[in-house]
Length: 137
Length: 354
Image (cartoon, rainbow over all chains, first blue to last red; front, side):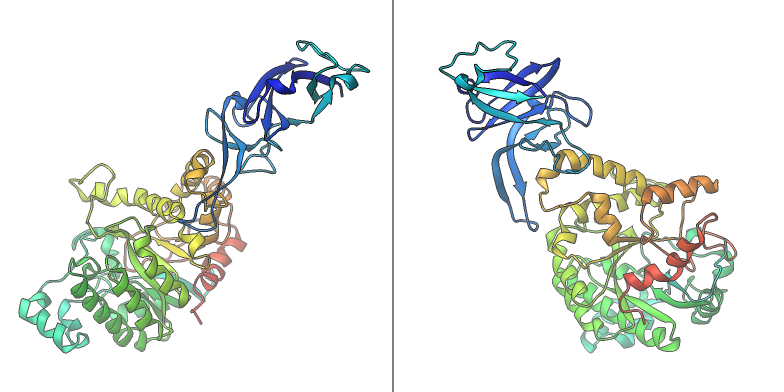
């Protein structure tokens, strides 16, 4: 696995995402409450650009008429058919075991540490003053 | 195929009231006089869903010489019970009383019918069981009638029409489901309508052909409503038996319901599994009429798509005319499934059968 520098930390603010191309693959990098996650930008259902979907909470209920919104901003709703995916794991709500969007490990690495290498930074200029979002694949 | 073994449980037979006068002894004094004063006992309250001369109402060899098919006790006893060597048969009285607009009058009729079936049919053959008829449009009175009848263990189910004033899942109906669950009574949903609304999705049909054929889509609506409204989440022990619904529409419904649910499940967040899985756990279907395809391999395919051996229940639908002779089961069912259809599935569905 190679480490790919895809953004500066300040570039993707909480609740936002960035679509990047890493090793020929489109990946959505999400900032959820200052933690970063990466999913392939392809819905496992029919191939839509999953990471362009709405970021939503998780609608839950124990019984009819009871409503609870949990995990605010941690779910992704596919723009084509509305299937919900967990941004943190890529698991779909309906079939978490069998229908998953591929997810990739993400770390935040100070530029100082990156300077030692190895890393790939195709579009991001790395300087030692900043912190960077690094996707591994 | 004919039924290969004795001891089956026939989950749908239809004793019929020969006329309304037979109910008079079963009304209390008030309602008896009310009915007589208004001349209501001269009406036959034939269910509009089953017009008197419709061929489906009675197989030619199951029609009595005189009177309504299903009204002759001895015929039902020899043809349905002895003829199929059934261990039990569940009586479902289809009658217009369940749809009478006055809630109180409808409830009075339902009480009379329940007492009539107990005294005139159940008491005469130990193999007979019955469903409780209720005024579905009056949940409070319906629940009260369930409580009253539940004391008699020979009542094993609550009978409602498929099409009511409101879709069956709506919360107004929940007192009925609560009472039923409290007494281990499944809800038997029989083909037909109270005709508060057109029986087709498009409006009022002109012909019985349109009306009757449309009912299978009504059953899909029943499942959509019961499942989406969360009835099986609220009442996790509740079973619903679809009677005279046909079967082969079910796999297509499962596919559509599951596919749509994956996209819009957030609006019904109480559902924690797919609609098809709720159906597999809670919904049962009687096997007559079985709209079986002509090839055995095709039937096998449908059974595989349903993917649950617990769902089908044996029924003759006596005296309705869906098949001739003794071929109450479609050809090509695996032996193990036949055993479940004939006995085991019903015993699990109806805890009060014993």
